Image (tube, rainbow, N blue to C red):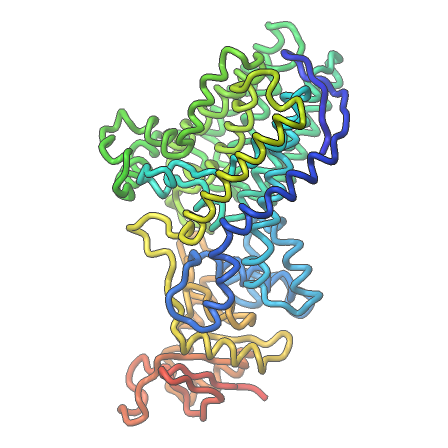
Length: 555
């Protein structure tokens, strides 16, 4: 960890190192991390036996993505919905380490993401938060241990807001790639703060160019985070440089014109829709009201309350950070305005992207909150405390112990069900016992590079994730903007599915599918091959007690 000595108003690039406190933070983070992640650590055993699960449905998608990257030697990177399809634009970078470990150990991608992807992302976020706090308060080094631990404290939904869709703990756990994007944005903010003292105009322009390149690279971690954090960092650079006020105003005007041009008229290819049309008020806000459960936000139903509900539902008690305004330096006050204003602009001003794509329509309104909460709290909390707090090891150690105790208690109480999410969304589907057994059979007998297929096209990715096999086709998220190759594969699957059993068997073999799973299949005494009957004229290699079967189509 690097501690950067700064003056109250203008950050400095002078640095002093306190690695001991950095490692202390990582050690102290282990207990709350273990408690908050209990639903992840226990998931592999629950998946092996089938039945009700406590993990969100997206984990199967993440597991298949890691398997695809890990198996790229045998099958070129491809769209997750089927082998041989061109890969879709996506933020793959955060999966890299997990995929590499799965490749070298022949491990299952689903286990890797459950056991490693989330905790590594949390460690990176804590480290970045610690660096940022050090940048703001170098004379109080213990704050860089204490404040990151408070990220394990209950969020607004954990405190009874009833707005679980805005729950920080839920969202960052079911989508850990956001943690990597948030960590990158925090580190860029800290780096940019240290560069703002450059008095040479050429040096400031070079800083801007490096920032733009770094933001482009950070998009590979989590695009939705950077699409908000990036513009805010650019505006912060423009308003925080040591230049005459007229020059800062020119830069701010230029960036405002560029931003409005993009928001109003210029769609960016390959990215979610970024259009300022007020759709958040019309669609995102009613969706939040629909998902509101019982809690202290449920009475705020009028449209005028939308900004309050979004900020309170996201930040909860951390809204007390506004009290830091009188003590915070000008650069931090400017940043506070940008973070809250930018978040509300995206949440209520942007139109949901209903064109169809890899994500959900509200992803730019919703996903950035994983960055907004730690960015806001780590920027304001250091200025809520007196200047003497966190200077000495004695007081710092006591406060760190208190922060850790609250974090552990929160993990004990909220961790096991943190992935529940809004009550009106059934996001934790059960795994039929027969499906779990069929997947285990495939995994035990499959050879590297085998292709498998579920008779129902498995839109939840459960079979390929549990079996760690490459799917021929997964019937997920087919929309009008899907590529011609994806639409062609979907049509081909429908054609195969409609063939008579004998012809279907031959066609599945020609497609290179070695393992074909179906279930529950009709009883043996049922009429032979009714419409939509998934059975094949072949003796199953495996059959479960609840009528799930696995056919081995190729030797």
